[in-house]
Length: 285
Image 1 (cartoon, rainbow, N blue to C red):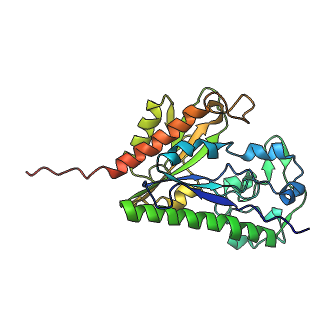
Image 2: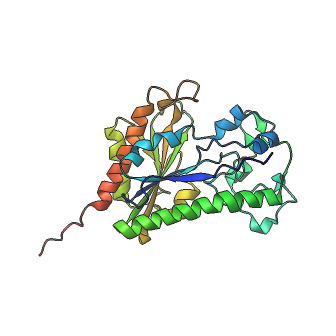
Image 3: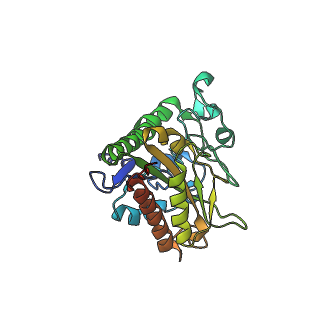
């Protein structure tokens, strides 16, 4: 019997032609766990799912319905992390190990959360054996690079049409004791102009959410790679506390699910409105 075709690793949703300067990215909500991936894991699927930004792909639908475009990963984070540099590889996971000169050491890799996650806190090592270099190359060449190339194309399309493009990179974070809300990350001012950040924060707060800037999440590889304010392409990471939109098990939609979708749509709308404002006229002396 012929093998069923593999599911595509991501999908573009929204209008075929950019209708808004805002592009949303959802890199960590993929749930297309292949049988091959599950067979390679020493942990059950429900444990692998704890790596996900659970159901964030379903939170962006309202923003898309209002005109934004989105790029949504279908490949799970356990397979490859799209918010990592492709060089952030734990050499000990690969057989034979890749040359050290081509790798990028980082705290994330050392912590087991590099390009291909190696460990899950409280559960230990993920994989039964090291992956082949060919398998690592396949994941980079068929998932990671095409995702970022497609995202760059979408942002350039928006910039050409509107003169500016804004990436809203959507994530969720584990609940934190004493602090529930939304964290906006702008790489400490490097990835987006301050007035856009201010517009996003005001929109989230108007929806009833507490906000923070850059702590504990200042933006990852996606905002660093794609945020180029000097070229008219801005990038902002959004992290929402999972307890605000999921049930007590942090697995299924909770009472706050629709409110979270409205908040993300409001942030996208505020960013678009700010981008499309006419330049301030300069009064004559």
